[in-house]
Length: 231
Ligand code: CTP
Ligand code: CA
Image 1: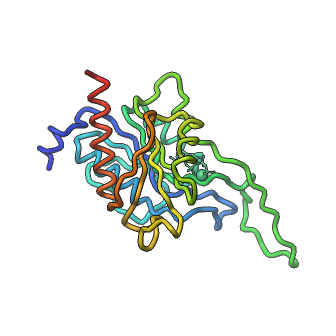
Image 2: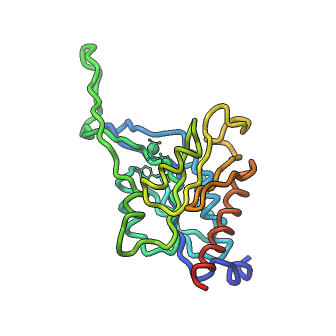
Image 3: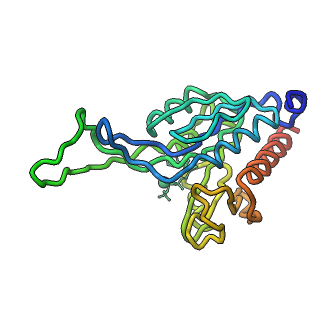
């Protein structure tokens, strides 16, 4: 395996991957989170390492082992994730597969919140930084290829194309996470995925496949794109 990696198509490249959910604290014992398992992000990190890349995996809380040959930077919140991503740069390629919480509590209570005579606690929210957009819009030190994911439940391709433009990334891997996706058991937490790859040239639908297969195909595509740009 070491010999394969040494001659792999991403040898000498640094690939940064974000994965998993983020946890946004409400008080010392409570948080806001989502159903991301981290399976797709971890599969990408694993495939990049097998292709010979040096891989940094910035991961929110997941129940997955560290992929072989990958440096894992564990984080909790979106703000932690942004800091860890910036610390890991420069990278040739950055793949943002994490399901970052869009909002966090406007303030974290220093002590556990208590039921208080029946009054409901107010929970004010504030927006988290957009990690993908922050990195994609960098003028100095931008990775050559910045790739986002877009989980949608309707209008998958149109929403993803708009997201690609808004966020300033090169590619978007869009997936249908609705119950009607046709993926038995659903995409979130499951082992399968059906994605559309959205690039500047338009979109292409990939066949339903395992998250490992989607990862290998995307890594092969990345290696081809880096090779083209160099020659
Ligand atoms: N993303 C990110 N930081 C955020 C939110 C999203 O880096 N605070 C990244 C995700 O990792 C993903 C891409 O942006 O690669 C799109 O995430 P998505 O949740 O689909 O997009 P949003 O802009 O949050 O839009 P939506 O309202 O559809 O959730
Ligand atoms: Ca979001």
